[in-house]
Image (tube, rainbow, N blue to C red; front, top):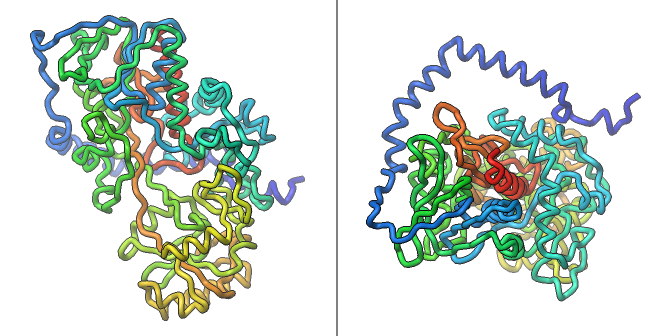
Length: 577
């Protein structure tokens, strides 16, 4: 007999239901093919592709032998020193290969702070439940509309814990707190690790959520960039790795359509150097977010919606590091790019002082527009459809009692604490009175003693907003959101002053994910989907990991995949797998 909790587990988590859904989708696709839709679409894309591609691809550089001032011979070349590239270089070096790493910035490049870690020793330490990797993978495949490659997701889910242990072991004295809000000793304040959103709020059970967030995320509150030098040094300590910064990769070298056996790079003096790679090349050059022509070609909706870009990393010439270099180099030697219809922009909304906690949301017309109980990526999609791409999050003075019912999700405030943890104060998942009042003082949050006073400060249809709030309050008191079906345990009336509002516009894009077609061995495919010998990819160069949009179902999955597949790429290029 099932318990009440088991009855609430949604069918999306069930592989049986998932397979039924896949069958239905297959029937739908077959019907479309019969009607000629996909065929016509493919022909239109083929007709448009050459001219559009030429605008961003350009011609492969022609470099004469007389312009090459030096020649180097190594086993493995790794291009790009982000998480994926450093992992590939260290991995190859630890497997006995002579490795040359090239990066156009002046140091290893790291952004963000989250890592998804499924199972493993670290999660056992915190007492987290063991997850079935297939449950995680099946949910992700649904998020990706089954346009990603399941074997890539499956291998990542099974090996990410070991890869993360390998990563953090590079700093032997790394401080690891046991909770999200752990106090951190002064000597570790600049670099430490804690589990994100742990322990879970007592009311949060991801099994019953319509949008489950798997409790797998580890978190470097000060950012992961400080970890990368330790990670790189482990590779250098083998004596097999030479790291070159301020060097620009220009073009790949391929033997008459066969094996990739090297690269031409430009050194800090602007001179060309040929680097021969006996075993192969790993491309880990990142995405193309800061290449306007590529962005328009692969993700036109980002340009159409005027989405801003959040990127700080620069090369030694002062230009953004993520300009699609690797995709162009791969395309020039015949590599196939992940379908342009499936690239996944990472634009998850993080909200205001309460994050994106599912309080009432109204648009400028004073109306609700979505189930507020949705993740940041989906919320962003809805805001992009609104008048002036603007929404208002509205809550009242009962927020402290309501936070404990909020989902333990990416960017959601779900803890109330009046005690700031020592050296660990940047977390978005908790709110104190001081934080809220500070936000009010800065103008980021608006406050009114009455609803009318609050609404007068917003650019909103006041009369319509009052009616919407009245309707929302009636639904809340009735315990049933008949309009948008928000979870009943998060349906709180807005009626106790003072009242607050945070303005939500569009978020900024962090990365646009869609690289060269690849597989779980980090191979690269040509236009006929044959493996190109000697060429491997990792990180945002590895296509077929994500599709359509980035999933906040597993926060930290992007960094985790870059780490895991960087390690795999380094191993495989040495072994010739």
